[in-house]
Image (cartoon, rainbow, N blue to C red; front, side, top):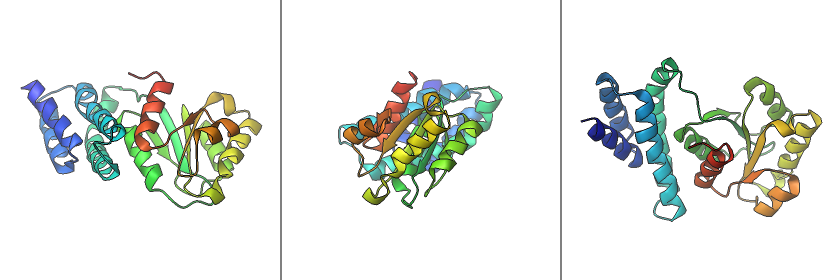
Length: 214
C-alpha cells in the first residue's frame, strides 16, 4: 500500500500530471504517510530522474517544464507539513537574471528544478543589479548565488556582480553559479565563478554536489 502510493506520486511527477500529483499527495497525507518520505522517495526522486533523462537526451525542456510544474503543485500542498516536521531544505539559492536582461524562461526552469530536488529558492526576477544581488545576501544568507543571462550584451553583469560581492566582503561566503546561452566554462573561470551550468538539469545536479546533498 505504502509503496504503491509512493510509486504513484513518483510516476505522476515524472509525467507532469500536476492535478494527479495533488490528488495522490492529498490521499497520501490523509493516509498518514510521512511527508519527508513522500518528498524524498517520490517527488525529489522523480525530478532527479527527469534530470537524468534530460542529460541522456531522453527528455527535453518541455518535459522538464511540465514535470517541474507538477512538482511545484505538490510542493505547495506538502510544504506546510514539512514545516511542521521541521524538515530543512537542502540549501538556499538566490537566483536572478542580470541587469539589462529581461529573459526569465531559463532562470525559471533552473529555479523549479532546484526546488524539485529540495532547495529553497529565492527568485529576484529579471534585470537584477549587482547591488540587488549583494543586498539579498544578508537578507537570505544563500548557500548559492545563481546568475543567469541570455544576451551577450548583458554578460558584463556577471563579473560586475562578483566584483560587488568582493567589494562588500561577501564573496567567500557564497558559491556563485552562472549559466545562459553566452556563458561557458572558460568564461566562468575567467570571471571567478565557482560553477558553470549549461542547462537546468546540470545546474540542479551541480548545486547538489557543491553542497554535498544526498
